Image (spheres, one colour):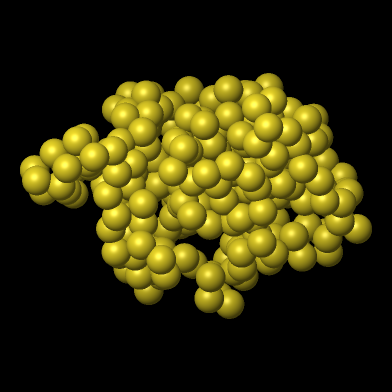
Length: 251
């Protein structure tokens, strides 16, 4: 049974969430950049959790999906705070975080902030540091100068409306970079990544695994997989990986 709610984060912006009852650890789904909790992977995981009896929490960051706020005013740090606000208020005591693309970066930040609660982490084409390595460093000098001067620019997207890249996003992202040093996370981590991903290089998964401090880290590469990993076989792998992560921890 689903329960839906909205959390005022304290400044009038309401964050939308959906919660399902079940046993712990609670699975928490963290969507990607310009994505939302009602997307294909979120609904697939909701069905998996309902069938297997695990509790689940989904949420939309500010400026995303059903939540309030403006996308242009968001940033990695703000969206991580949004996730923590909903988790601290609405989630169970023990959590397994599942993050898709940018949500994988958010999941790593949440796990670093709440290590006593996070029992496992699963990244789907996880994209830590993407604002720097995949946005800023991919821009021409002219584009960088225009972004700094005008405060934003747009870039084409293969998934619909153009991407809005703001100076706030880039500058705040630099305060939350993870791949330039050890990531102090000790829980079991599973990373799924397609080797035909045109958006986030699959080598990012290897670099992330190398940086994570804990020893129980496994990377699964899908040779013909692309960024979304939403084909039936990809979703089946997602379910089996999550089931294994839950089972291996004795839950």
